Structures are given as C-alpha cells and as structure tokens.
Image (cartoon, rainbow, N blue to C red; front, side, top):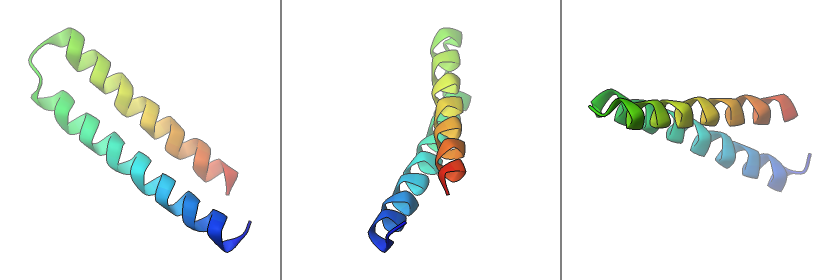
Length: 57
C-alpha cells in the first residue's frame, strides 16, 4: 500500500469509528423504538465497515 492509500485508510477508519459512536449516542437518546432500532442498525453497520477496512490492512 502506498503512503497515500494508508492515509486514506486512516481517515476512513476514523470516520467509521466516529459515525458508529455518534449513532450509538443518538440511539440512547431517542424515545421512538422504531427510530432507535434504525439508528442502532446504522451503528452496527458502521462497525462492520470499520471491521472490513481493518481486514484490508
């Protein structure tokens, strides 16, 4: 991997981690169960993206 590609991966990993955490935080504050489930699913999805990117390294 080139240095530029590694920088991209670092940025992508950071963004996925941040999105996962934000979705989780919002899910804990939402009262509507359907919306809470959707946001929790998004958090899981971002965790999966993070794991997939780590797997590429």
